[in-house]
Image (tube, rainbow, N blue to C red):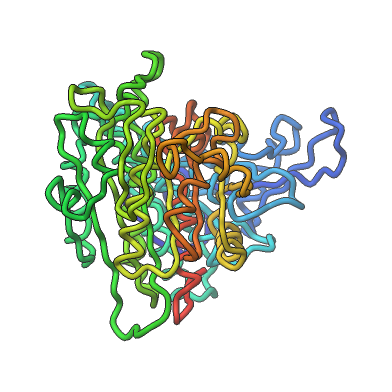
Length: 508
């Protein structure tokens, strides 16, 4: 999809579909109150073209609500689409992102190939941030998961044009557009990886895909397998992978910008279980097909590293991705086994389906060995997090307040939702083993926190954030702005967190 800017008058711009945004100005909470939508466009010809339809009360301008006007009077466009942003007092950047995605998905379903969107006028959002969010939303809205359908329809969007005022700072807006393209495409890269079936995306293939991305963007990449993992004495990681005929892959991506001496080194660690059968503690058949998405944390880190390489913040970053299949083969680890992690700690295996924390334990240790001074990991780790937060929020746990506060600030830019869950010594006590240093599972109760307490043992005093994205890595149903399937969740937040450490802070 080609993205571009235009400062041509909206009424004179020729396109397949022009999109303008609207807000609900009603303040009453009464659902029966008469709607009072207002069009957020400065061009009076556009306002006149939509006025009659807006006035009849059919359209309320609720978030992502749509209204299509064919052959609008006085306009060069073939169609005028009005997309709601919800209550005017609550308009935020994320609403613009979703509205742009709504416009793209509306067009795709109707075979419309050219879409333009006018940035909303009269809202308290910087033009650059609104434009970047709109581009992100459009690119995310253009993604569909039906990759392997032999009769896949051609729903290509050829172009997405952002309409801006003639007197605006074109250079700043072009920079915002470029950032939006990078962010949207990087998140879609993560989505495409998660979408791949387990037989198509093995740990080895994930390493190849990461290496190809690195070659395109100038990152340094190493992909190691069994020999290196055993050489490093990564017993926790190897224990998970030993039950599969597919060899594991440890992917190391490095971003080292010129002119950066000293300062923090950020370590990004991702869980990359390309298929999770549960091992000997095998999962039930229901929904096991979805276990191809158990590498969503790894995909988020790969997508984030692509963005980082292209945005070029002035901070060093290392990503360590531990990829494996968790299968019940004849050599699989068994409940009751004891594994020795890279750090030297011993782990009793209570449940082989609690494997994500095992690969992350060695990944976090290795990231520290490579020089990481601050750590963040992402994983589809626990069902307990889904029980607590459903598919609305991801869980976040942290051992350090400053690093947590930086991430909270990043969320204001990314628009993603996280909810903090507790760490506590009593959770740590629940992970003690009678035969080893720790056990890999204390049962279902409090599992999001007890799993994180296990990980905390492997980060020491290093400032660390743990992201449990189990409930948000996959959208169960279509949304107006987003197809069902993989979400690429956490890519934007991780990137904004990384940028907050840049010695030269730029961006929106």
